[in-house]
Length: 214
Image 1: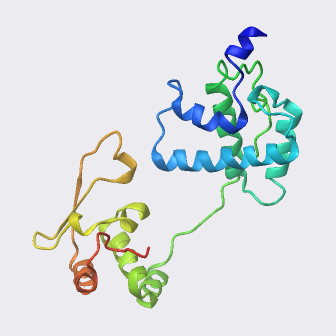
Image 2: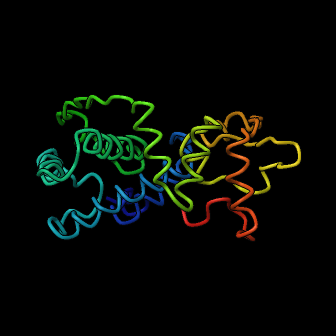
Image 3: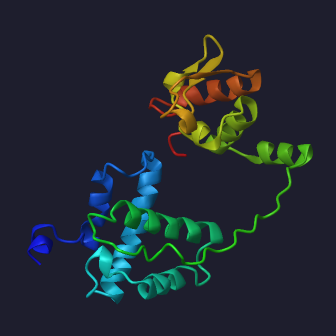
């Protein structure tokens, strides 16, 4: 009892900050951590509402975990989102196992949902042409960046003018996907059609991003 008073089990309300400070947690990127924080906060709110007497991580039983899992997938979440949510909770409980005095991870054996891939087909050339011709404003430039640069959506949406060299007709961009482990810029030539779009956009912009609204 004295040991527990000196080193109390981790409270659910403090678990996320403890997770961030834990030296044995995975080295996740900022976007991933934001999503994790959102998911864990949803669980913490649910616990406060449904089981306020269970204040610490070790108070979360398998029955409580199953109840929460059932509340997640009442037609509101896709299988993939449901699985990611439970996997995050399993991860937090695993990382904080010792500090939280967790003897059994209640999320470990909960059945994940089968993620059935949805079939998609590529747009035909005519469909793609119609979409591009109908687009206006920033959406038109976004589509142009995607088609003529081959960059991923996130890179197109967050492209900065400092990365666009109109004089040399190149885009110099460190892709978001590889920025943390390999911060090496990729050089992308600017297609004449894309350059015309950017030249039309540039005089209207004085900010940092090529597509500030997007």
